[in-house]
Amino acid sequence: MDNLTAQISPSVHFIGAFDPKIRTFDIIMKTANGSSYNSYIVRGSEGVAIMDTVKKEFSNDFFSRLESLCSYDEIKYIVLHHLEPDHSGALEELMNRAPRAKLIISGRAVIMLKGIIKTDIPFETANTGKKISLGDKTIEFLSTPFLHWPDTMSSYLHEDKVLFSGDVFGSHYYDERLFDDEVGDFSYAFKYYYEHIMRPFKKYVLEALNLYSRFEIKTIAPLHGPILRTNPQFYINKYQEWSSDARFRKNTFGNKMLSVFYMSSYDNTHKMAEVIMEGADTIDGIVASMYDLASLDERNMIDLLEESDAIIIGSPTINGDAVKPAWDLLSCMAFLESQGKVGASFGSYGWTGEAPEMLHDRMRWLKFRLPVKPIKIKLIPTEEELNECFVFGKEVAEITMGKMVEMEI
Ligand code: FEO
Image 1: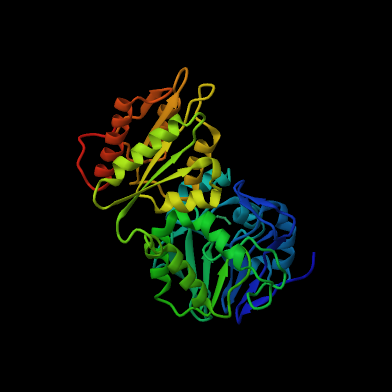
Image 2 (image 1 turned 120 degrees about the vertical axis):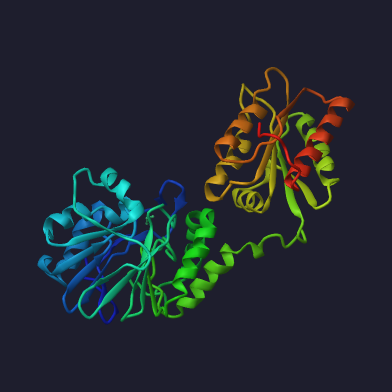
């Protein structure tokens, strides 16, 4: 290990760890440039605070850096901005080494603490407005839940104007030069991180930005990737822009967007999709579109799902299942908020025809509104059946526009 303990501000140093070899994070994220587990030490006239720890395997680096800057007796507070293991991995050992330190976690973290640390340890909770003092330094806490765990909080060091933002403004990007003006171009990693970690929680991002706006921020110290010191407002503006609905709807002129996604083996589910879309498009205020899942990549799936107010999925049934691209489409909802979107499903089948029901069930778990029953048709749809599809599309569109239905199905 090198002896990197870079100074972030007059009273803050980096004591985190680098993970250049990691290539997949949290199962779902690619990390072409590795990552870092950022941890910081804040020194005041009456002791120090340790801001987060690191992933357990990197504890030695963390403790070496910490010991080069303070003795364990000096540690007055240990702050965990959330309890995810990549930041709480060295907590138990740190508490053993610094028994006089007080652990500070958010109120929402209390029920998680026991799941992470299997023994009872003393702690104190912090919510927005709580402050702790290190003598001549004051740290104020801000409740910023779901960014990216429910228990996440941020904090602000008043005298140095440093925002400890937790995962917010992070990047999975390893570069020991540490600061945004010294590392390589990490812009792709900054955006990718937002899209995979923060995007499902846009409304919470906006609430956090609102809290941050109370403070003059000179440096943003996130939990992963470069420390942002050149122009913090640039990064704040990016989050504001990406979290604002204004960037969507640009092609629909204020209309609601209804998307029909489908796959078809023998053109039958495709025929149904066309007529469902036509029916939906007759409703004022709806712009209906259709997409063949055979040719849609994941990035486009995510964007279209996010922009759509209603999502209708069509799949044939093959070996008692919906086809893989339909499941892939719904797996993209992991990156989005589905609550409130209208959902429906359909499909042509040869033998058993389970696919529409299966997709309907999955959408229920994903918290879609499901006001109409799935529609399934044996092999080639007749004129009469296509009329049913037309009415089905119309009905979903009307409900999307606010038509009341008695109950969800
Ligand atoms: Fe980097 Fe949500 O942990």
